[in-house]
Length: 145
Image 1 (cartoon, helix red, strand yellow):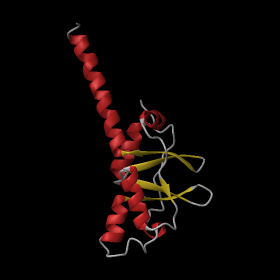
Image 2 (tube, one colour):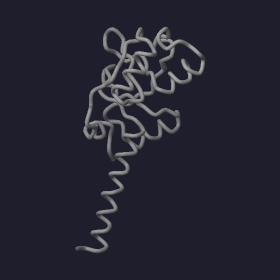
Image 3 (tube, one colour):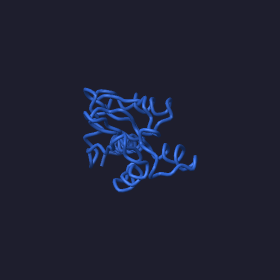
């Protein structure tokens, strides 16, 4: 059964994209756009995870409320009680967490430090690849070439 660590190893860019809590929502949205990600880890002064801010947070808590993106701080719109996993968490557990908690991004944390971020897209890509391999194996078994 694949684990978070296995999934992180397959990602082309393993760097954690983060932002400080005093940054603006505008800065957060630009960073997400530049890095082509849907969420940012919010890190405190010691590098510890203190929150997560997502595209949905910016849409719902800034745009929909008519707030100024350059005047709204990340700390005002971020989710503080972050659902996390560790390197050993099985991918099926991560998928269940995402489904049950209705989130699309889960940080992988080790000793209060974010070591990676797993998105629903990462899980879907891994599951798709696993299905392709299974189908190929079954085709070879049924009709050896």
